[in-house]
Image (tube, rainbow over all chains, first blue to last red; front, side):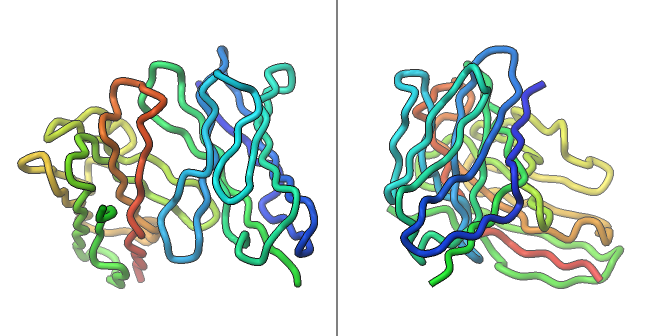
Length: 113
Length: 118
């Protein structure tokens, strides 16, 4: 069965600092991987997705994620945090050819001024 | 383009009462999803429709939860009777296709309905 583990339920960074949100997946074959962001009282919005075309994936709002098969990881990064990045971030996995998306528990990002 | 609409946004009920949520997906989207998001957890798929047919309802507690998507457009999710553990945000999402496994098929989420069961 597929699953994702997000390390750290809360991450706090200073404005302008590097953002690193960790995600590890469990799957017998490399799956499709996603990062979503959820702002307060809103639904989830897709940030980026891994399609196996390139290991480094660029998304919206300056975020990017790198697929590392050897580490079964898909960590999300942003070089410089902005106050508007404060939100909850979810990593998700879907089997290639499948249609069911499994979400991680989420990591809440706090950005300090 | 209008997004996924959900109502109500908030609902407070007592246990053993009934409640219904409504979702209107993005126009033209064939697939509709209902997720349950308990505080501190990621969304969990309850049911997935392709047009008006059910694709997956393996995690829907069928003794108390029901959902329908008449005419393959909007959908309602009902809980009867509600339990304390049903307190959660219920998210509706839609996608253009959904069951083909196409990576390009992005899910678009509504704002959710926050249910509190007292």
